[in-house]
Image (cartoon, rainbow, N blue to C red; front, side):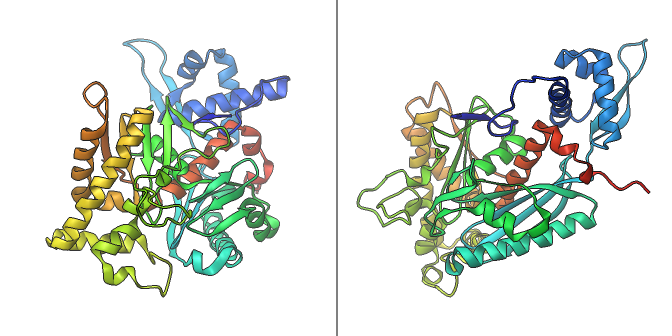
Length: 426
């Protein structure tokens, strides 16, 4: 499947063929309405979905019994008439765990079905120096600690999503190629599921930029924008591309590798083995080489020991007017605009949302990028495109990974109906 609704699980759902599957599909339909709106009355749900009001009442009654929705008050329509009792998504006992493993850190975002954050943390970790085996053991330990914290909060995880800066075979949960991590053909989903032992939680793996784009589309600065691009801003640069409200995956699911656009044939060697890739010009390590040359040669840990810390250090220098840093950021900004213009000419997005260190340094970086973008985009007058800084911080990918799990749960309510997820009766 070349494209995927951001509000749907990969692969979609089969057409209902029996009473049981029809009911599951209708439960999912009601849950999606409540996920996309703060609250809705049963009558409103019936009007929007086309289901009979009696059917909606029965479905809502079952969801109330399962504690997946809750009553939130009444709505009055017109001067006269019966008030409508509104319901909202609840599911405080159902959790979703999102993880990101990147060059210098592991991020965690655990939430319940309604989006309430239960656990959120970031762990510095030398993924490259540790190799895949030690990295997966550490990822398993971090996941286990997060699961315990979620269970203590009463939100039992129903699944785990993992974001990786890599080409990912999503269907098999295999990291096909992660140049910056030096991982190749790694069965991450199976390995992590095995490390969690008897918990037997389903694990889904996806590209970090795709999952960050999902988070942005759902709750970011350009939420709901049907044509947008998200750019990560860490050691590497990846892209999540949204076209007509769908995540563009490509024939094999490997689209969005914009960091490897060749922009300078005479440029530096990239982690992918090629020369002059865009990320060699705008990745955080590239900025450090000119803004913090004394830091760039530290090799006690990964190439960028803590991207968030380094970005904050550069931001402090920029605020103080450090001329070397100002020039370095201006140079990166121009390269960011050049690559952004290629993306804009190809996909015609309304907005390019930048995350990671790009967002941290947006005040100094984006004016240069926007100027270059406007200079190079062919349809700049007829179809304006702008850069925008994400407000989700460095945790966008782990947040998106959790959102992916929630989408999968809502799109397949049979997993939500598992009695193991229900609290024991006293």
